[in-house]
Length: 344
Image (tube, rainbow, N blue to C red; front, side, top):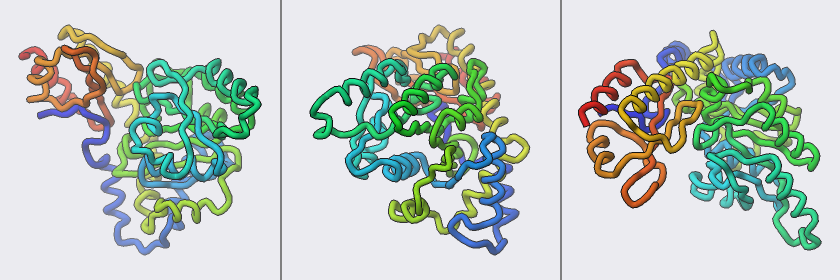
């Protein structure tokens, strides 16, 4: 059985594991007050081109989203998100659990449009009863989106400017950011993300780390006593070194970028194989996630040998499934997939 189910099916990159072993017996302060976390933050700031960034390392994506959104919003505010956004669909109501409503916008393969965002905000403030409604307190987008789609720099500039004009922060979920900035079809860099957002996070879990996400506040806007807020939400790791060592390694010798590029190279190979085998794409993304329409009986046979993710029902006879490559996808996996598809 080979797996193209997602981009976190294996443990961690060998360089990270080796570094964790090498530093294992060093005596260090807890809660992120260690030399590796400090070094990681310096390297991340350099990569972002944002010397005054404030950085906090958290464990996982849902934890990160809940922490950032709940810390930035006032009690009466909600967060604007694509209707397909991760916080809206696949986080088990974590944001609502923190007391904040998700205000959804229509999306196209995961992306929201600046025009529709501005129209929502205009209508909200034009409503004379808006004081009785949930205030739109921030905008959440992911890059890449849940469909692997990417915003162009122009699109991000438009959304960013709208947020500025309404004085609300733009938060970018970067769970798969490594694969977004490595795409051959993007004009967005990590430095662009830092300039255009108010806060974003660099995903480690899906990019070679055992776990970990680096939250980056870009405008000297980290909420006061953020560590205390994190602890209240169960997001303060006593052995913060575990995150520090991993991000310090990811941002040494461009490992983070190399991991992203590897997944894109393997994605291109996988796409060619799927097309040559006659498979139809629901959405062919520029990143590591690919969405394929498969006849249900054929899918049953495929799943006997290949692990893929259910995405959605296409019609009564077909299903959309996701194939994903990652930093760990080997040429042997691609060749085996080709052999299996030919045999079905």
